[in-house]
Length: 78
Image (tube, rainbow, N blue to C red):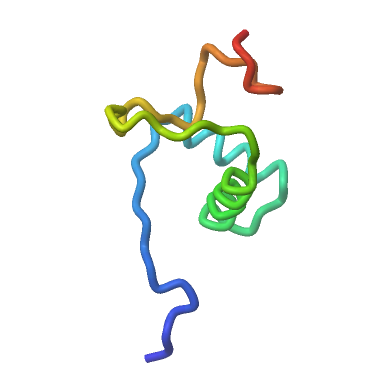
């Protein structure tokens, strides 16, 4: 059996709204797969500047893909 180019699996749970945001990105950018779109979003996020370190007391549920209280264009409070 051939070795996988990406042998590590990452499983995440998304809300319907979060999945719609990922799918919209995928189709807008003509990405070949959902996995490719997620990798591209991760790449962009990891290259972003100006983000702060996570609060050590934060829980997984405190993080999400979309935030209804932020402007969709620039991420600023709406």
